Amino acid sequence: MNAMDEDVIDQLAGIAPGTTLDAVRRQRSDARTHAQASFTALFAPLDPAGFSLTERWAVAAFVAALHGQAETAAFYAAHLAESDPKGTLAAAVIAEAAQAVAQGPFGRYPPGPLSAEDTAGTVHRIAADRRAVLGPRLAAALEHVHMLVYHPRDAAPPWLQALVDAGWTTPQIVTLSQLVAFLSFQIRVVLGLRAMQTPTATTA
Amino acid sequence: MTDPVHAPQVHPVPAAFTRDMLDWLPWLEPMAEADLTPRHMAGLVDAPRAKSPYFRLLAHDPEVLEARTRTDKDIFYNPEGGLPRAERELAATAASRLNGCIYCASVHARHATTYSKRGDDVQRLLDEGVAVDLGERWNAVVAAAVALTEMPMTFGPAHVARLRATGMADLAIADVVQAASFFNWANRLMLSLGEPAPLRK
Image 1 (cartoon, rainbow over the protein chains, first blue to last red):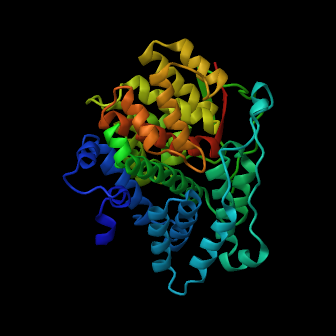
Image 2 (cartoon, rainbow over the protein chains, first blue to last red; image 1 turned 90 degrees about the vertical axis):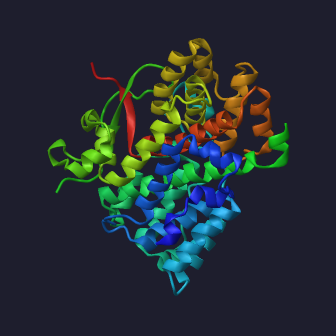
């Protein structure tokens, strides 16, 4: 469990003890502690409640790959590989992510004055051959995750019904949503803290 | 067993960004108040949140909820230096405006208004969107929030330099990053687990 104890944001952002950004993060020590506690609660849960660790790492590897940040994508891909000794699932998740990269946030608003801001995008659907490798639960989850990452304002009850139909319970859907939403935070904080460490950012 | 996904409720749909108070209706069944154990109450952090359907829905995973809430509180409420509260709320509002979370934007536009006393500017952000001109300091905060929110993300050293040029030190810049990033967490929960509705009188 030692790997789970190291602060993941520091690790991914390359923040060493005693640096300026280490001190900055410790001035928001609750945020630092509880961002890490969120990671632990999601990936070393007290009670997985039927949402397996392999499924969690698979979703995380997919989300991280879509965000295109090399360090973070490699981190979650490595955890998935560790959780999937045969490697077939990891290969399928990474290959699917490579086909699923898009631009966002797109989506529709309720009809009215904001309709002028409606932007089109592609709803990601997983092909039958890969669905067979992923299984129905994970395939449904990754389609939902793609919506959460790229067009969350398109969310509606039928998206949740698709998860329910694939065997996801209400508590599992809550955790799945938290996992994607937390990673959306963690990946952006890492990007921001990395940008703060580049020379042009520090000398301006 | 009841259907896990709630049937759409018939109510007027808020169709514009607003600073008015809104309600939020869950699409999945929250935990019943009577079923909340000490573990769930710890997850809720503040006992009055047991009245909120949103927090009782998230209480299905109490450990994640507690960590989410304590992260949120420190980023937005910690008074020790860094970015003024008004601009933390501005970053939250800008991220919510771009992602399209009418509920989140309403809450944080009200907070931004309260702390900045610049309600007209906050309303223009809601009405005109993230390309609005609010003066260089606020423009720099909004641009940073946008660059962190859009996909692919475009935030980089130039955004940091622009924030620094408005007089921000590292802690304030990190606060912009964390506030905008946190709303990429919050927006996805509020948008995908329920919907806004007019406040019931």
